[in-house]
Length: 345
Ligand SMILES: *Cc1c(COP(=O)(O)O)cnc(C)c1O
Ligand code: SF4
Image 1 (cartoon, rainbow, N blue to C red):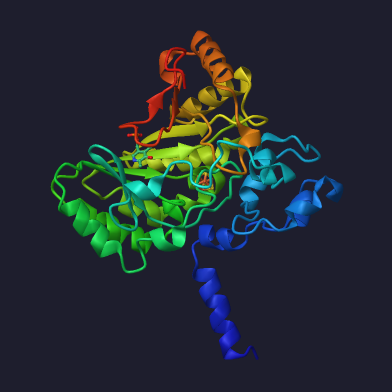
Image 2: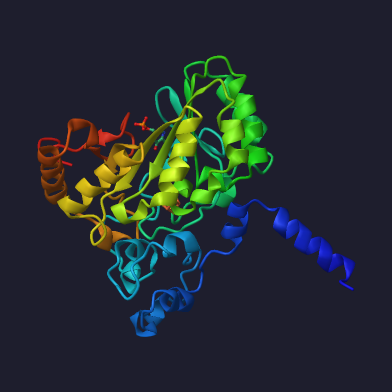
């Protein structure tokens, strides 16, 4: 006979949506990652054994898209901690965007007119080594710790806000119950017309786009935009394509933003293929970000002159709607700042 407690635990486990089970089962051991990719453990620098608050974290669905036996794989490069992260370089800061200065209350960030960003979750399915939030104080920025009401009230009190952006972390690591509740309350605010979701989950864990998600996403009166985050064409496979189709089936507009990363996507051919692969599954490129100068990510930086040349090559090869806008975040600027040969950024 199975003891009752054990039976209960396994029932609860199988009741979890598939994506939540995948989230519990991400790869977080460096040794296991190398073993899955048939790579030698000697690749590991002993200094990365402890990555502190920003450990290795990658869904198995994403690992499956990495090329085995290739230490330079562009997907692996995005998640593998390396000793280069410990280099301290001048100009690279713990919190490059000074977001704490733009947080009117915990969980809300307003930098631009008409749009407000809600820190909807404090974690991601994947830890991208170049992430500007790698040192972010999520513990104090998390709206769900009793702050959701305050966040909604403060948006309701400001009629200049038209668009709410759910961000994080990754907002889609939150449960559908929580998200549906938040979106319901936002939908009641008359001066809002648009809901935007910035998420990498449909790319790194496409099973996240399930019926429960489509249910609330398809039923808000707000016009809805989902901005994905993919950096390399190898990230876009059939599962991702089907997840995008499901999203678009609810009437959502799907865009993509990328970060320009040395050793990942700093070749024109890859960026061109990325745009085409995105379009093939129904996604338009939106932004190509220059790296935010966060400490630990300097080795990913691509020089502005190189970035400009890459975008010029894209422009020559692609229709205008497949060329993303090259931008950089500048603390205090009223929008993302376009990078041009003349802007001196
Ligand atoms: C990027 C960002 C936005 C959205 O900017 P768009 O140019 O509208 O995409 C809004 N708020 C914050 C804090 C941002 O960082
Ligand atoms: S998914 Fe986005 S927010 Fe999360 S670690 Fe990656 S870059 Fe950072």
